[in-house]
Amino acid sequence: MASTARDIAMKGGGYYSRATIGAKHVIDGATPLILQSLEDMSPPDDGSVFTMSDMGCADAGTSMTMVGTVLKEVRRRVPSRPIQMVYTDLPRNDFSQLFRNVLGLTDTASYYHEVDNLHVFASGTSFHRSIVPPGTLHLGFSATASHYLSDKPAKIENHVHMVGAAVTERAAYAEQGRRDWEAMLLHRARELAPGGRLALFNFGVDEEGRYLGNTGGISMFDTFNALWTELRDDGTITPREYFDTNFPQHYRTVEEFTRPFRDPDNPVHQAGLRLDHAETRVVRCPFAVHFEEHGDPARFAREYIPTLRSWSESTFASGLSPGRPPKECAAILDCFYDRYEARVRDAPHGHAMDYVHCYLIASKVPA
Image 1 (tube, one colour):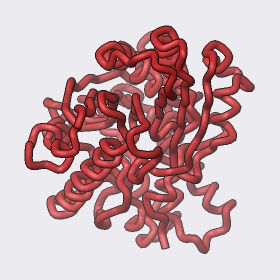
Image 2 (cartoon, one colour):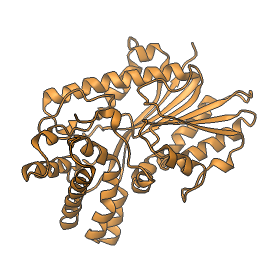
Image 3 (cartoon, helix red, strand yellow):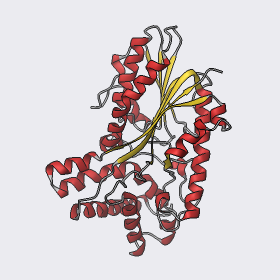
Image 4 (cartoon, helix red, strand yellow):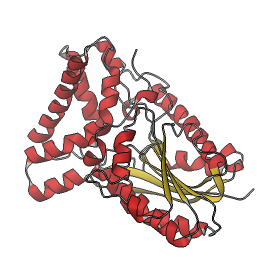
């Protein structure tokens, strides 16, 4: 049986943060929003523990610069308060690599030795569940993560992603996305201390209908589907394996993101969460930008494909039959990404994984 959303993981061993430069650009570019949230929070210097979380952290490499900047500012503002930094992700996450990165044991520049009275923890808990005790979270952060659903609500017959699904299939994903978003926000509402802030920067569909890898050029998800279909049609994978391969994701619109905060009857609003800021941004694919500079299609293809593979490979692997030997599965996945690389190399123009995010800041009002 194909794996569910609970089995999804970013590629480990440091691969993820090395390959997903664009995700780091998203977080770095949004750092001023988090610093403003901290200023608006105006935390008292009362000696109590200050807790920040990074939910859906992968190996922590993409958020390292931002977290360091924010925690140094926390330390400047509240010198007497111990700081607790909690990294969270699914159980299959590479937490060993995370701690190696955070502790400065890799070539990733770390803030760890530059912030006094700092205590770093990790939790193998989905953000779809409660993570820290009620009323103890002061600054909750999550980027490029909440589009993952707690489970797949339906099988998509003729595509691998909800953006290409039929109307009824897409509606099922939208409904699952609505329930998961509200449930996640309710967990955070319980965890936040009064006056605490959430900084949530997540994939979505912007006001012009753009989404990840689909900003006017060649659609990344349509390319994924075309190549996976080729492998089905040439017998490399079975029709069942194609059918079992669906990303457990929903890309929300701005209206879907903001509705729980704006509706007074919604449980999220009633739990005390208020929307302070919402906007969409497109961050260009760094590999496509570099291609414009160097003009080498082979180099572009070689550098571009790893960023796609870093987060998508586990979904395609999950669609393969558990009866296949591991080496056979690895060969199929290599063939799949090799074919994508060949497409980009042979006709590079239009390929890009531009990031489309909705940037939200929310606060917990006092009871």
